[in-house]
Amino acid sequence: MKKLAVIGRGGTGKTSFVALMTKYFIESKATPLLLVDADPDQNLAEMVGIDLRKEGKRTISELLVETFLEQGGTTVGIPPTERIESRIWTYGMYEGEHFDLMAVGTKWVEGCYCMPNAALKGALESMTKNYRYVLIDSPAGLEHLNRRITSKVDDIFDVIDPSKKSFDHIERAHRIAKEVKIDFANFYVVGGFRFPDHLESEILKSLRFRYLGKIARDEDVEKSVLAGKSLLEISEESPAFLSVKRIMEEAGYVRQ
Image (cartoon, rainbow, N blue to C red; front, side):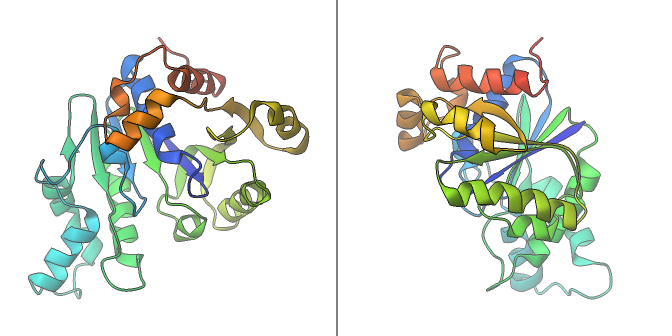
């Protein structure tokens, strides 16, 4: 089992990248997968064609509200994160043919993600053994690294846009990951769909991290995202999918 985490600033295309990575692994027959939507915007399920509400599934935050607020469950004694784990399995995990999916959701109490993140961390430590790959769609920014949603990840992909803030994000993300002792093997940089082709050579000159390439801008992907359609249905010949295929192969995930 390998864990892959996708990070980056908001609007760089992190979630569509995770969805296209999912398509790549499915078509490579590299399954089963676990998709983890740690972003409060909760767009990943839609991008892979899943409606969690219609499937009768709840986010981790919703399950915490039900268990400890609405049903009056106590948070003393057995740690709440351990008590919620079986409920995540039963009510929070979408199970599909090629992948399972769970989402953190929005804050369960004002101002704090502490308990949802702790519940997710506990779930990731105990639930991931039977998957070939775990793909984590991280929230924008760097706070999630400080919260150490996962303490061990094989590959981190930082998706960037053409801005100084995005380049600064790379250095800060790598430094924070080291400081909070996240155990990772590789730290990669990926150009988002808004990154101009002519700036790629500049990236290679200025980065001290390995640059894998850029996600191609694709009208079909843009239309699918706007319409709420699954990116898993995108043609294998789509520019975006072909670019993600090259990126994954560059990272060593060779298609069988």
